[in-house]
Length: 220
Length: 220
Image (cartoon, rainbow over all chains, first blue to last red; front, top):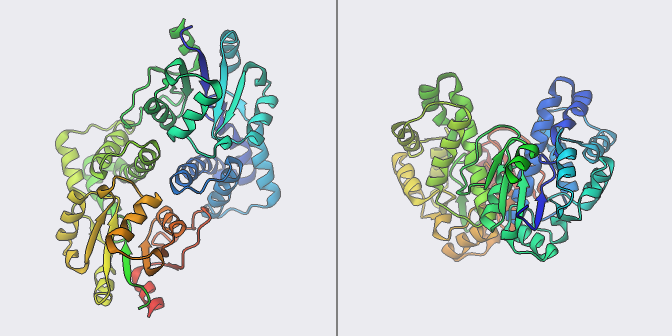
């Protein structure tokens, strides 16, 4: 392999955020799928806006705010118990089908998790999914309170690993994350799970694949 | 009146961005309304992401990128001529119904336009709508290449007006803009045209009204 480290985004890349939609459907019936999608969208928007405004709060709190906002807009009744249960679901997301086998094939490499998520979300998730042992480092933006796609966030990974950006392959399914990582100087692999179009943000990933297995085929 | 200046956001606040949906329907038929809405959403997202990544390009270029991305996702055929015509429509947006009369009532005050838009979009728009003469200053983030809701953008208005934030009432229909302006220190009026819920971004506007007439009623 040609990289000193493989740095993985978490939400949407290793784990399927929309696996939460079942639980949303349980509570919100026909509005459940739309709420789970709006929830994710607002969660990202709130990260971006707070990064720009300089009003950081941890991802767990943003995730709760986003849920409460979406439920207010959708005019669905929600209790503290429901909120707690839905946030718990974030700790038990399903990994995508090919993830475990792909990590097995890369296990001789330096594998790293790097997320906007706070440790109180990342550690339970990695433990519950039994993927924790594949990763030598778990890096969170919460350590510096700067959200991706800020260059400050990507620099934090280089500092933690003591590596130069060009030595690192960064993998994400989120086009905005790939754009930020590419502008920063990482080598990038866009895991285009949704089979959509790359955003027009003046950045081109080094690899464009539909899942991790396809990427490994191109690496070896 | 109790403020030294009244600073107005432009898109969605003075002018109806969705008035563009008719032209989108002309070109994209049943997909037109959805494209016009996705176009606006992507336009904002690209501003936020480029602000975070530090890769500023002018609003006119972001607007074009957002349109081309949305058309690619929606798999609709688009020519340079259609792009040019749709971007031209941004220079001829319709003001909301009560705007002209509201500006009349405030014309003895210092009225200011402050937008993420570049001057090559703002000046034609204000001239075409015959609203230009109501405003003593037209301020664009393009002068400093920092998009709202960055504190650097709001500070630029204070510098241009040589005023303290607390002396300024900032008016916007965009909740993210109100949040950024409130965190910066402006007095804020959220023109809640969509009659929706305030985003949960740890900011509360000083006024919450449905249109400018309602605000003036509360000011006087």
